Length: 67
Image (tube, rainbow, N blue to C red):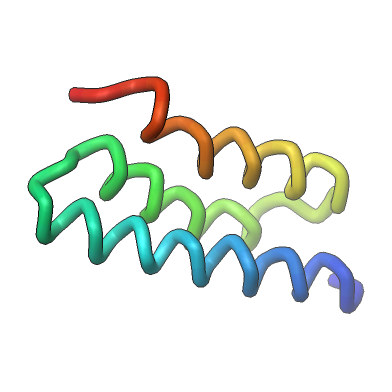
């Protein structure tokens, strides 16, 4: 892992933690699930462009999908 991948992983992990807290307190399943995915997925993907694209998609997902 290079330093830029680590930086993006920390950023998406921080946003993911916020989504987890928000989803748990507000009973929003999609926000909670998206937060968990944001915290975990950078460990499995090493391509920086894929990390950024997937991170942005998972950050936007709770605004468009609700359950």
